[in-house]
Image (cartoon, rainbow, N blue to C red):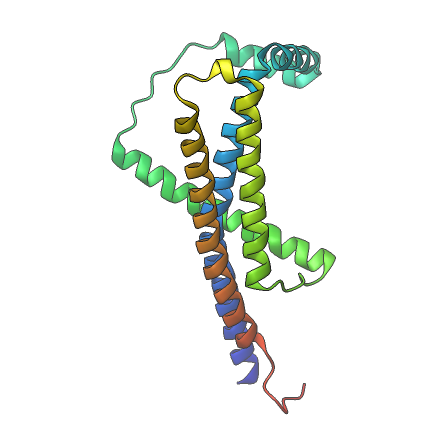
Length: 200
């Protein structure tokens, strides 16, 4: 009976852990999108340097035995037109969300078994880290603006508002994801805690 209870606890714990990652995945995707925007701004402001670096990387990549052949075949293939409706996009987004969450869950399990249990960090500290990261993100946007102001059309106030709004959205998504994940982690810890007086 006790073994059955332990197995049920483990299954429930895995389910909670997976659900935690379904809540953390939007935060990771939002950060990925914001950082991609920052990289694109860097590309616009330092286009020549980036193009030269990409050309060098592409040339090096084509010299690799297997990769070069596959890239050549891909580029020589005929273009295919893909028609995807709104329902198809929703289905794809949902499946991608669930698959990514599962991938992150398995990765966390492997790292935890390899490096040991992760150190518990307070929610306040997590939110401070998120806020600090968003401030750095906003700083990156602003530095890119002043590094190549001639590449931006429109008033400076409008761009500053957009940059601030992007950083704020990233923080709000992060705050939500971290809060829900932290609460689920506490529930999971309570669930897996051994009752007082229990013996093996």
